[in-house]
Image (cartoon, rainbow over all chains, first blue to last red; front, side):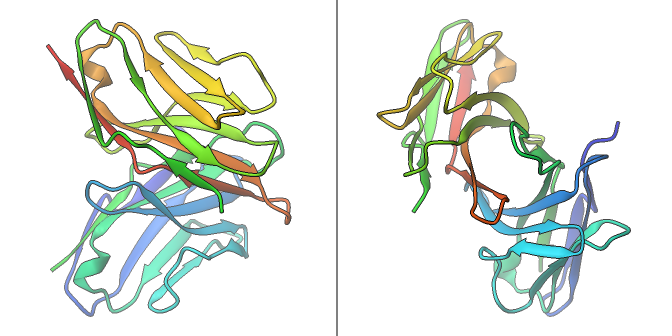
Length: 115
Length: 117
């Protein structure tokens, strides 16, 4: 199954530690989106990346959060010095990025818990 | 600004009955796509159905169909013959191209559907 792979599925961090979330897009997809979902809430857009480029990071907090999608390897969402408010489910989605119909394909998400 | 509104935080339906989930959106674009995604307790986001804005015909996928009213900017999801496995959060989403040749996807806040046996 060449779906969107996210790991880890669950991540527990103490306040002040760093969290690294990984996302491998579907085969053939070069566009990756990261979303955050707080409990009982919808999906909030964070960042949109192509290979080696950040296309839109308007939804990402200016401090402590960063994302990359290198030429080789998965996309990484990094949260430095985590705080309790960062506890959420983080979803990655990918698309081929071509014009026309191309829905987002989602991973299973990473649930981050900050203690 | 483009927004997607789901005004029903929670809905209930009896098994085998029909339920309609509402979604409205705000846009000045003429070319866009609309989607319904389902998120069961497993948290997996599953594409249920899509609609191209330039198509007048409402999309249908088995027991799922949409009522797309472009002028009213309304995109409701109808689930017929509801099954226990339909219980989930349902998200309406809107996709539009940006000036840089990329896409923006905007999601509603979701409707939690409960199916009663």
